[in-house]
Image (tube, rainbow, N blue to C red; front, side):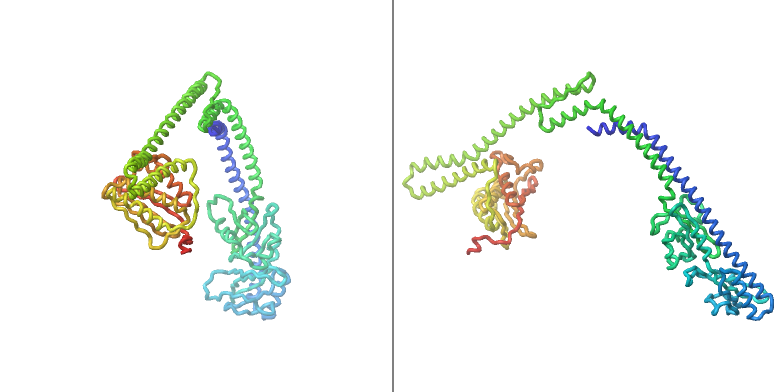
Length: 580
């Protein structure tokens, strides 16, 4: 009922809002792409400017050292004079400290410090084309970043001029860059270690010489690649960031500018939410209008469906009242006529079922009771003639008791249809019960011209059950097997123990049961015989279920049938066995 309305409203909404949704999707994509491109261009311009400034900073210091080197190598000066020149330049350029002159073999010649720095300059025969080198960044006692720069000198005597340079100015440049409220710049060396960081809360990363994240180290290669299609994202401890990078050159350092994604794209996200809200309101309004209009059209179909459900639930007096003169109103009239006819047919079928049931019960009673009653009648007539024969009187008593037990069993079967028979549970030996049933029915099997044998487990098979009820189940199954098996056939009763269960099988080589009747043989008044009430298997199934067991059957027409009983095994032996 709801599905028709929903589909109708969805159709109207799709026809009206689909173009809007498509336009909104394209607009959102274009807006986000344009915002990312603009943001990337702005951030990258800042990063390039910072990288150029750092490059110029090192180039300036390179020129200073080259100028100092030309003074040292161009004239014949003593070492103390060279040291004085170096000291004068330290005073003129505060960012330079501990300037040392190395000869072409890498041996320190003169230095402004107490000991020359541990800076391995390449010897002249190393074949390196580099004329300007930058060492690893260190943090001095004042917690300021420093490094060593080396300039190759050319002249009458070549060599290297090495100086320690303070990078405090680079820190100030990095600290001065802000992108929004939470965007910062940082500087990493060629190994990926932090040199400077603009976030005050992350200054410890520089002091600890911490490594940048894997995403940050890969960022430089990505930004250098052509045809970038989107603004890069990096995952750091502070969250997800949009980021750009620019290489300094010499040294091979990288300037990275990061800004939280939610802040960088806040305007685009806000516009997206507004656009989604407008689309959602339009969609809901269209669906509501379509649902209201469609409801007025299909409400009569809903009324017809409601009456159909009522009839399916058994309310046979339910009828539909539809107004109008269209096809739906005609359908309602025909539906009411069909419901009236259905009530009549149901009552006729109920009468026929009662007649058939009573006929089957009567025929079954006649079949099951005629033989014992006739036997008792014949015995009564005969005893009148030979009453003085004591041996026959004993036979007469046994015959009457046996046939009366048969009559009683038929009556009990009828009574147990309405209510299950009460059962008492106590440990019994199922093998003993099976052996007794086989022994009792052996004469009938012999009279039918077939073999009846048992194959019981060697170990006792104890279960919690009612001995009388189980005997009844065994007799029903074995007797059915005997009656279904032609002369010369075989009936086998077996028991086995399997993983805490007791399995009983009654197998015969009889005619078998057709597959279409196999599923109903445990129902009341269902039998494969030409006569009888058909209660034996139904009662047996109820008894087995009451005792917590399971019963199933497998049969093949022309080859035989096997009934299988499955019970939980009991660890306790029967009380009679314990008493003995």
